[in-house]
Every structure is written in structure tokens, then in C-alpha cells.
Length: 338
Image (cartoon, rainbow, N blue to C red; front, side, top):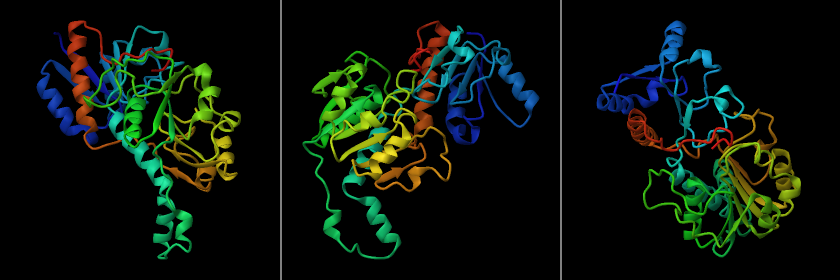
């Protein structure tokens, strides 16, 4: 093939990907890789020459900046950042990193949920204060076995969350408009629920109000789209079982933040784990910092040792396909955002 020019945006810094990038370039002698640098003119020229742009959130602001780009590879599992941009209506292909995040995010969900039911945050406070809890019985655990976990967004991440929670003895429900069978890319063979057999029942998004009252636990793994934005507000949270818990690991803004705060403060929900926010980072006066029974994490559920090696394995497979004119793995629907 002719030389393929690849440009790495600033949010894919060489300091993070150096070893994996070196391995990739050594294996692909007809590929020229450029990275954003402190030299604005050189960076702009490299972007203009690029056939392929690799980025997380820093999309080129206009077509004029990347006139030769034919493909954008995202680091993220979703593609909501593309919706509403010039890319949405262009011929530029967009691929995601779906299939790379399932196992670590599911571990995060499982660990976060276990931390809530075993009161680890309260134990951490007691440890920091160098004291024994005054009423240990008040911090007794709740048994998850036999409870119902509802997974909103049954893609590769949601399916692995379901597999791990099912292993703890939870009953699984799924809410997703897609097919029951998942044929997508995965870096973790033997994981997830590719045949979609774990959920005892599948719900369509229009059945949200029938889905929520059955849930002791809700895992929000859906992409952020014009259809999922704000889909869970005060009315929907009120439908959950008293003492339910919610874990948010996909995008902020799907669950409305202020109603979630109110439900936790009023004790209608027993706890929440939140990894993503409407504004990132959230401002220092955000109510989440003081609300009871909420674990905040800085959008790290999908970050893990070995991610960049897995990413470049996926990217290399797609470079091969691209050079042969074959369909790309994880090609996103740019209008839907995933």
C-alpha cells in the first residue's frame, strides 16, 4: 500500500503510548505517524496531511484542518463526541475502542457495588480518624445474592457487568434497543454475554418505567445520545425499589445529577457510585462531594494497565482492513453516537 499518514492528537500523548507506538510503527513500515507538538505550524501541517486521525475527545474543528482525513479512530468506547460536528455528515469513517473496556469497567462496577453494601467508605473515614466505629452493627453488610440488577445499555461493557454480577448471584435484566446477540470486537475472549442469555427479560427503552421498579441495582452503561440524555430524572428514580443503588459508568447526564442528589439525601436510594459527570472535572462546590452514600471517582472505570497495548492491537487490525478496503471493526453510527 502507499504510505499511510497517521496523526495522534494531543489527548493521545507519546509519553503514554511510547512503547506500544514503537511496536506498532516497527510492524508497519509503510505507516508514517506524527504527533501533536509544541510547534503549532508543524502540528497543523501534520494534521492536514493525515489520512487517519487518532483521538479521544479532541476532534478537528473543521474539515479544512484535515482535508485528507478518511478515518478517525477514537480511544473511547462511545462516539457521542462526534454527534453534531461536521464529521457526522461527512464521508469520514469513525471507529471506536468498543470491546477494550468491558472487563476493567465490570470489575469497577462489582467493586463499587461491594464497597457500598459493605460500607467501605465509612470504614475509610473511621481509619482516617484513627478510631473504631462506635456502632459496628450499624455497618453490617447487605447480601447481594438474590437481588436484581438492571443493566441499561447491553453492549460489550454492560454484558461483562452482567456476567460478573450474575456470578455473585444477582438476577439480570437488560434494557437496550439492540439485538440480543453481540457480534462486536472484544479484547477479552470468553467474557461478557455474547449470546445475550443472562438477562431473564429484555426491555426496550420505551419500557424504562416498567424496568426500573424491578431493580435493586441499576448499572448505567448506555452511550450518551440525544435519546439517553436526561432519561433518568426524579420521576424515574422514584420508581426504583426503596434502598436501591445505582452505578454510573458510561457518560454523565444520562442520570440527572440534582435528582440523584435528592434521592440519596432523602434516603430513598441506599447508595451510588458515579464515575462520569455533566462537567468534568465537576466544580468544587458540586453537591456530589457532600451527599451521603455516594462514591465519586474521576472517570477512571475504564483505565487499566495494558490498555494501550490492547488499543494498538485493535488499531493495527483496522489499519490492515483500511489498507485492503475492508470494513473496519467498531465502525460507529455517527448520528447515534455509538
